[in-house]
Image 1 (cartoon, one colour):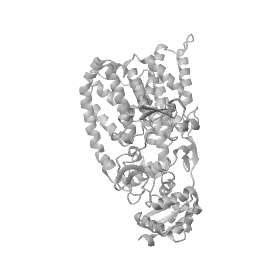
Image 2: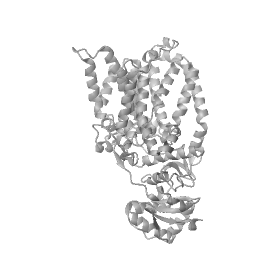
Image 3: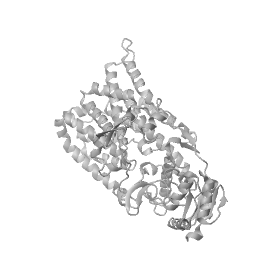
Image 4: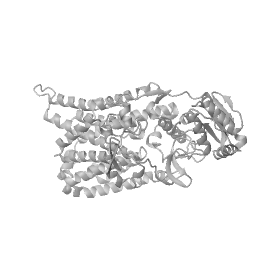
Length: 593
């Protein structure tokens, strides 16, 4: 890749002979897989009840996505929408992170072994696959040393932000298509087979849409910065690239749109679609770059939490040794056009991730950031700007690979005892990368599912309506989604954990269903443990809400302040609950029919 990009006269030369997959490649890939398995060892050894502690409620949500998609596929239903949650309005699955690119192919696995196994496979395979994909691209197209490529690939797959998202976001852990999309764009610039490369790029882009649109957007921003930086240094060479790029990108765009147009129409204009999901200003604090992530060798939860949204959004946290090292490498490699363009992309993506205003260790400087120019544009306005730092990960990996390769070319052997340059370089890499190396993710045992859901007792209470599980599932407690999956998705539930519109006439996105008086009342009881004085107006509103939910049954499962919730529901319904297989049950069909 280096030679081809820097030598325009080679654009029309035949492709170099491909490097065959050999034992060394196998060892590297197996090392990546073993590393990923160690990271998720707690989950793999407790598949029956293991729960990633730092995922908050996201594991429940993702398992629901995997389970519902498999349920839809195997029952010949449309997987793009579902009414099994947020009944009867339902959920726009395309507008959520359903990750159809994995959830559909893995649906047989989900049906056979359950969504927790699919969750574990998606996360483990995502990290290992991302590392292996970048290793493949680096070793075949960037550097000559497999060890150098292995170092770069390892960083791309197991960098601190990847591990952070690996707690809860398989769409950000599984970026194994991105290296091949980038490679295909570069091949288009080389101009050998623009039609073929355009078709392949279109297929890759379309598939990535079904794996994760936000990672694709971030990657394309990073590639655009790289391309601009490279063209600025080689303007004459850029002219020869224009025609094949125009042909290939046009073909790719048409093919991508042809494959994804209907799902994207559902996402943006279909039932329960929304225009934008606002998060406020969530750029990285500059301190986030020099600190160590929670899930790293040198990491400490306190300092990391101080400058991040939560443990799943530690989007920078490269650690100060690596930050210093990247500055040194950038200066060293600056004269190489390709390395310079990569370094510029790295620094610009880090800069963009600071958001609309520069914040230094919690101090708002008032200095506007470049993201301010993009923050309100369509698509960009739903992106968490701190995640833009993830666009710097491949650049860091590439620079590590290039630098290692150059050192190994300067010192051809590990046996040079006069100046063991290779060993010294590897020692430097260990010193820089060991503090940010990942550690196994914390896994806890999830609460047991009430027997009411697993033994089929619920069937006598649900006919054609929904189940209202108290407290109603939301972003803070989504256990009901797991219980529904354990019951084989035999009934729909009210409310839930998803992203949808704020109301029938308000297409701003929000997490969960719009709150009703009844859901707010029950949530307040759960949070504070105080039984309110129930009024007739609240009773009437509760019946109205139950009718809107088409409720057949109200179920109170084990929950915080369960006794107070039990009293509150009995006061609202003027009816005592029945204790059945670990839960309290109210058959409300006479009230809602």
